[in-house]
Length: 145
Image (tube, rainbow, N blue to C red):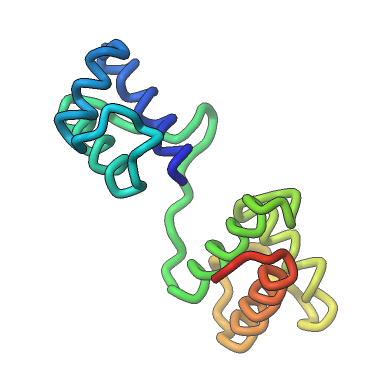
């Protein structure tokens, strides 16, 4: 996450016209640190907020739209676990598309029919089964929860 925030800071500075020297001055003023490598995630977030106050408007990447968070906390947790697995290289396709494909492949026959979209799942037993399977995958991949 810190690398993504560092990239976001660079994009923000470019968009509002700050050169490297001005960026470092802003970093020093906001966090007390001149180097982003020394910053925590919270400090980088603070820096992004400072850029937003100066006119930066972060957007989703080219051609992508931000998917709204799932309404249910247990479904959001499944998304988080899947993201951790993807970042660790344990699964090839990240995001909801990869998670939906995993659900269909892993549980489709057992459940009779797998949902088309995870965010539309309603059965708490199925969701609990999914989360346990994802937690087991994280455990096998050495991902701490």
